[in-house]
Amino acid sequence: ETGVTQTPRHLVMGMTNKKSLKCEQHLGHNAMYWYKQSAKKPLELMFVYSLEERVENNSVPSRFSPECPNSSHLFLHLHTLQPEDSALYLCASSQYPSDIQYFGAGTRLSVL
Amino acid sequence: RKEVEQDPGPFNVPEGATVAFNCTYSNSASQSFFWYRQDCRKEPKLLMSVYSSGNEDGRFTAQLNRASQYISLLIRDSKLSDSATYLCVVNLGGWAGGTSYGKLTFGQGTILTVHP
Image (cartoon, rainbow over all chains, first blue to last red; front, top):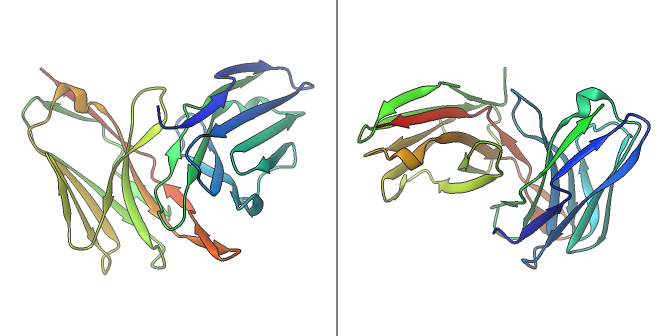
């Protein structure tokens, strides 16, 4: 266990559904991240929250909406997704001054 | 040009073999460097950080050449349990609100299979 918990582990949703992915870190870290890992592609950074403020948005479509209500929790709200959004979504956290990020087990998302 | 480029392999080696992975990165402003390991359908896990002076952790040796923008990983005496995808990771770094955070760019990974 890395101390980063993601739920649900698997999610199947239709293109008109609205769902949310949840990430919780028990490490006392001050930065949290969302990544996307599609088949045959490298992990891609989506969003970064530092001290509960969004500091990076890596040109992610607006159908993905992040939320960081406190330093331990991070959400990714999903709506009107496309089949190409099917991927493994990974959450990570880190603590200044270390650069090391610890990953959750991910949510495997299928959009039908 | 890809920001982080790795030989995708796959590398198929017998137990006990020595295997080397290479990686190049394009952004000279990159601040820190890592090798992560990812098992099939699992999350990436840190294998080791990489320093210019070179660093070793048991059977694993990592090296960074900033002038050439090149990172390497050497695995000696391969074990069956070393079978995984090895990810070269470069951190460009960010700064906001008086604290730093990571901006990691991942290579596509190098697949290693160690067989008996």
